Image 1 (cartoon, rainbow, N blue to C red):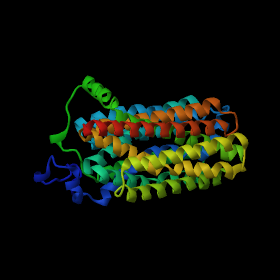
Image 2 (cartoon, helix red, strand yellow):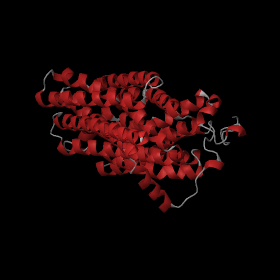
Image 3 (cartoon, one colour):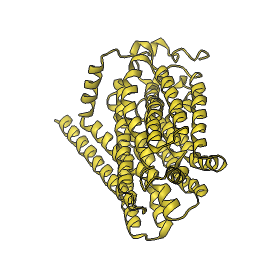
Image 4 (cartoon, rainbow, N blue to C red):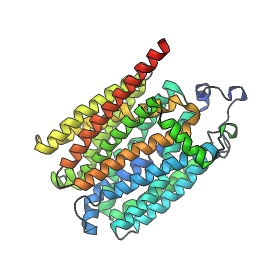
Length: 422
């Protein structure tokens, strides 16, 4: 373990055996670095949320314009994951992550030096292409090390740990903006990228040469097609993608709903946003305990039902202004808290069906989930009118769509069970 350039040491007697046989060799230091890598999506977005109204004013942009910096980021993030997954299945996990971190650092520097919204959107795409490597390959490394319910448990544990990033991000970002400007926020992200690059050198490779895949780009594309047509995986992909549409509608719309519409000072926005993060942490911790006692699919049912109900309440509050700030903030808290029962379980469920395709499946899951985020932020920006209405509508639709996909999963499971019975 002392040489970080070597592959994670595995007893030859267990090569090719289930990953669970190797769990005792895994240190919490490695898991800590994986949590940091998986947190890059939140770090890159949540850190500058309090500064979005100020950025819109600085650029002289109209309602909804600055939300497209998040949409641009999600486009790069979605496309990037499709690229990095197969690359890592061929060359291992660490080298693609290092290249991605380099792109992230360059993109963050470009954002800090941008003079127009168009420039910052372009650099956000570059930043996202790099950040996506750490996220998608962090998930694949979890699958390299764990399997089955243990993989779902560790995914929830890592998601709970990495929520410190979105919890602290808006709070620290608001302070950085107050002490310097919105540009200072992106310079801090440059520093985060450099520190993560250093941390990467301290962990071993998790994908041995003996199990890497060597195939053409055409074969990789066909592999994506073969994976996505499997009904169970399609259901997992769908419910996660719909939920992400609502989550990123919340991420892009809440600064304007809280700061502009309800008059919450920007330095206190992070506290409201952080409340939702505590909900995410709590549900992930609860999920990590329950998933060893009940099925992943049952917990997904709890999460998607909660998302639909809270999404409907958000929609009603955004249209009627019933309850004022708290009438919107409370169901928003409930909606984001459903993350712990949906995100980790949907990823683990999709990965469990085709464990030999961990890199490609992880890339496909992440790409389509963030594709949902593109739709969510794009619709909020397109229909923004200075009220929370657009955000509330998108969240309500996403909650309903997530529950419908869960229904597809249940129906598929019943059909498969019936065929096996005969």
